[in-house]
Image 1 (cartoon, one colour):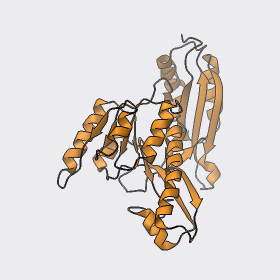
Image 2 (cartoon, rainbow, N blue to C red):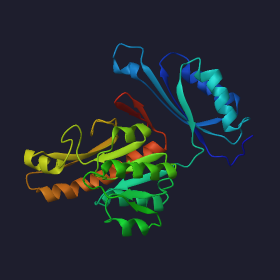
Image 3 (cartoon, one colour):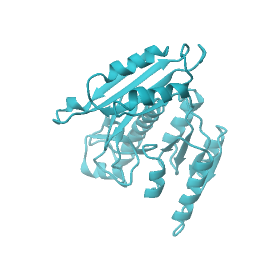
Image 4 (cartoon, rainbow, N blue to C red):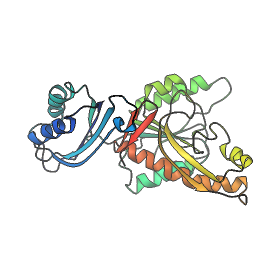
Length: 293
């Protein structure tokens, strides 16, 4: 039996769309003493693809009056509701996410996340920061967080990545945030953390994927620049997009000004993406996402 001070839990569901899903979930939670405080749902049937559709549901509920502990509740839900509806599901919220940050030389995205963490705006633990350069050591250690430098030299990338993966495994991280970490991760690395590596790319994807997007945007004479937070996949800068934003620019803006403007966008876009991920608001569906903001 949980106590009134128990934290809220979240039930995350996706399954083939059909009538009765919301009714079955709500009835189950009600019968076990849960009080639903927020519910969001979406069906791809509304996209007009002619198919049966995929249904997504996020339910947040208070646990103070549950008649079962969370493990027993999950077990009963799996057999009584999830199986009949062919659900992919999980129960979340009873674990504070452990988030590893990775950055190279630029500090704006990294420091934005560290500031929000210190102000208790991000309900996460940050067990370590990993970099391939010494540049940010003093900034990170000022927050009391261990800083690990693993340089990448010609011919040592595989060894360096193995060392990074070992650190992450030892730290038991739930999420990795690439806060301008300017190294390409291997497919083996990414496969260990499916939809659990968030990258910030300094352009409004799919425009200007790859290196030097601000330089190419300047040469192209664009009127907006932006940033994109997405899950990392083996295809560079093509993973499911979580959040994007833009800012207007003009012919008066040189390349350096584009960089300064872009960094402001990068910081906020990445922070929102991390916030939504740790609050279980992001569902991956193929190469798209459903985000309940």
